[in-house]
Structures are given as structure tokens and as C-alpha cells.
Image (tube, rainbow, N blue to C red; front, side, top):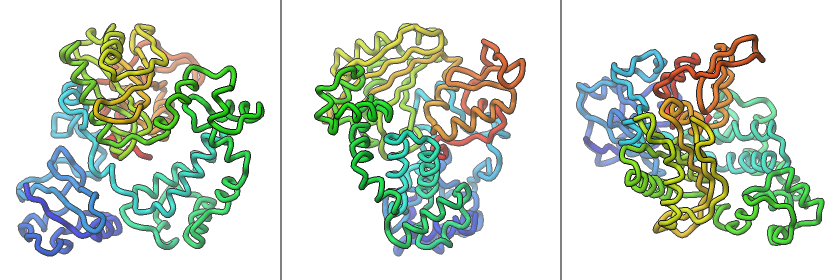
Length: 441
């Protein structure tokens, strides 16, 4: 394995050309040349493919560090432009089997999923609009519009400086193009400035920042005369979640760094393994998609033997409470369903300062693939997958894929169609498989 440092222009030019370009033209000073036959086969470099030992590290702003296999005889058996769901797992494509997830729950978190944003001058404003529409005004449609645009721009490995730079980007409508143009020209968005200047919106935004308080409750509290988080201590009728949200307000509003989530995953896996050897515990959500920070820590648990997961959650929660990992219990359902047990609470990772929201879900072996896809997200992909399943005559949720009968709004079978892994689920609903890092839609 050889470490090669490339100039950032390599990424930009690859994107513009639509293919992987030879690396030698972009080597930083002092880097050795790659073998000629390797350069000639540069298209075989699978950017971000952890399975092939080839990773791109974007942590250096002015250059790119590329870990590549310099063996010219090594060629990725599956070209990236092929539909991956057409390739059988036995022919070299990795699958998210139970064993592989247990051995390394970081599987599929490609480094390409954690590219530092090159367009924060745009996305910070779009994200703020998204947050206001979703959490304050309860306008899910407009929130989704700004969210999709922000995520699209965050994935670009180059900085947008003019309208020419976004012409090729799909999924951005005329009104959003106008918003982006205004930000590029003025450095701000008048719509956002007006919303931020509105005293009512500002107060609602502040109240809704408490865990357990949504847009409707925030409006109700506002109408009752509450104007700050400190006022809410005197509010009546708050849920247990809201009370916990107030108690840990300063901590729960902070984003969670990736290394802290990794530490939490390892800790819970070790504790779980002590209770039940072979138990499979991983963190889903934005962490599994490769994001640098998370809002909470979502644990998914199963056991490959098909029965040891039953009753495990209550034992795990008791264990984590005794060790101090879980400090507040909010909600738990133990054996309420054959397929899933759930727990919500607040906890603190040993060695770290802040309290964090903790969600734990235990699924049967049969339901695990569906849960893994659903709770990895993102929600845009989940909507697309439900729609794709519906077109194929199925109903899809976190517990299974069910055949519908009696029309579009008819009944669905009670037994799920088996899917051993994520790849099989994508294939059965007619979609190309996406690695977790590619699911930030």
C-alpha cells in the first residue's frame, strides 16, 4: 500500500470529465510517479472503495491524500457505472450480512461520505431555511425543498462561484436557483433575513429547540405567554421527553462528533457481548452514512441465531444503567412485538463530557435488513424506496416487505418477503443498490 498525495484539482477535473483521470498529472511535489501501466488503467481506481483498499481522504483542504493499491494487476471486478444490484454477491460484491456487520460495523462508511463541504457559503443559509421551515413553521414541503438543495451542494467537491457551476446539477428547481443566485450576488438571502428578524419566529425557533417540543407545541406555549426556554420550567402539561429535554438542554442541542459515536458503539458492543455472545450491535443514522457529526446515537441490534435477541433489550438497558452509560430512561417497549423492541433515553459515553440522546432498537434476524436500510436513511431515500415498493405491488416498512392485494389501498400480507441483506431488498423493489455513504440524498 502506497500513500499518494494529489492536488484538489484532480477531484474537480474528474467530476467535470465524468471519469477517473490519471493521477500522475496531479501529484503533489515530492510524490513518486505511479507505474505506467497503472496510470493507463486509471479508470480502475475505485474512489472511496474501502473493500478494494482504495480511499480518498479529504481532510486536507489544499490537497488530496489517496490511498491506492499500486498493484497494476488489481482491477475492481465491478465497474462503478454498472447497476450493482445486477451483480451476485458471490462474484466479489460485499453484502451486509450479519457476520460482516458484527465484525466491522463501519463497513460501507466510505470516506467519500465525509467530504468537507466546499459550499458552506451557500449551504449554511439553505440549512437555516430548512431548519426554520421544519422545526418552527411546520412547513414540511418547503423544508424538504431547502434540505434537498443543501445536501446536493454539500456533496460537490468544488466551490460554486457562479451560476455556471450549478447548471449540470439535477433536482434544483427555478425558485431554488433564484435563491442560490441571490446568495452568490449578495452573500445573504432576504427571505431568511426577514424570518430571523420576525420576533415571533425567533421565539418559536428558540422554544422548538428543546427536545420533545415540536412546532405545534411551541406555538401553544407561545400563545400561553412563554418566551424563553427558562420560562418552560413553569409550563404545565409538558411530556416526560420535554422535561428531560429541558434538564439536559445545553448538551442535547450540541452535535455529536463522529469519534464519540464510534466510542459509544464499541462500548455498547462490548457490554452486549458480555451479556450475549455473538450479539450484533451497530450504529445507524447519519453516522452510518459517513457524516462527521450526528444529532443522536441510534443503535440497531440483532443476533444471527434468530432467537437470542428476544429479551435482550431489557438486560442491556439494565446493564448500561448500572455502568452509568444510560442516565435517564424515557420510553421502552420490551417484547411488545415479535420483530422489534425499542428504548429511548439519555446517556453519556465514558470519557466524554456531554449527555446525548440514545435510541436502541432490537430486531429479529428476519427483520434486520429492513431496519438497517430504514434507520440508515436518509428520509428522502426512505420515501423513494416506499414509492418504488408500492409500484412493484409491495408495502415496505422497517420490519418487512409485504405483498399487497386488493388494489393500491388494499390489504397487505402479514408475512414479509424474506431479504437476507440490504442489497437483496434494493433488488426486489427494482432499485440499484446504494452504499450507505451514497444515501445522503
